[in-house]
Image (cartoon, rainbow, N blue to C red; front, side, top):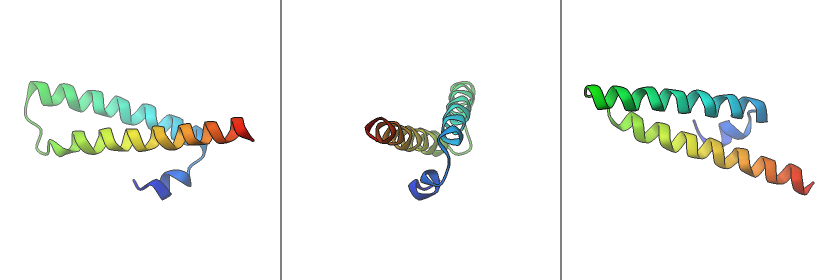
Length: 67
């Protein structure tokens, strides 16, 4: 998911997406510890997506506090 697509989402949608992605990352991490994943790069992509979501979410919160 690109940053532009994330910015099109509402703040509530971003919050739910962050929690869903974190849950998926946790599941994938345990799966990777138990057995090999077919594509371990999925972990990197999930971490980066979560970081992107959290960054845009914090930018929105700062913008609403400033306004």
